[in-house]
Image 1 (cartoon, one colour):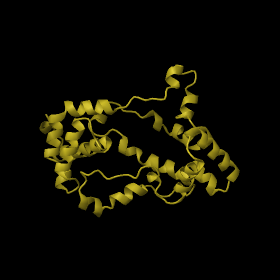
Image 2 (image 1 turned 30 degrees about the vertical axis):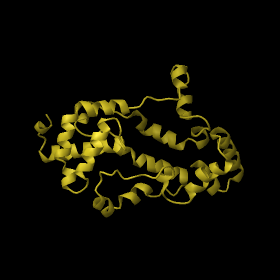
Image 3 (image 1 turned 60 degrees about the horizontal axis):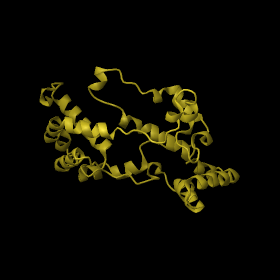
Image 4 (image 1 turned 180 degrees about the horizontal axis):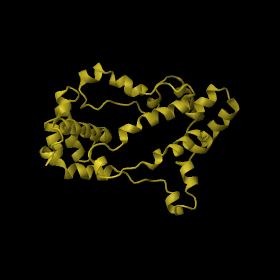
Length: 241
């Protein structure tokens, strides 16, 4: 994204140097780097779609998706233009999508859940840091790795692979299967016309076997449905037991 801003601001010398650095790190033709990371972001407001275009899960009911224009909203994002450049808008869009990943429901009442990376001074520092320090060719999490020097063991600080939460999520699906079946069977989202019950059930069965088109979207859908049903029963959770 910062390459697009260099082009937009007419900083052609800096742009040429950055294109060269990224081309050597990525090992792809220079024209591809320029097209993908410089020209394409300048071509539209659809910042969240510069990679793979977002897809609406098939369990979302077609009429509901068309009525609320979900495909266009997913493609364009939901935040107003930052008016400070492509890279800044990318940041704004990502920050605006964080709420969809936060834990919701009864767990928040049972324990203290914290998100240290959302500490405001840390977020402001990250936003104010030049892109040349954050986006380093051939290196991931460049700023974090530098900050952790002398704090974490080197084999941890330099590792390039991260553990995924997918295994825990799939294990939870199998362990809580009876509860999840009841959530889908009495889905309020289906009654409201927001989801197709049979397609949601099929997606849940696929996830149980370890194959989910959109595990995060599926978990969020089930979480919302469970919250709606819990609220409709005025807090009575006996139906889940």
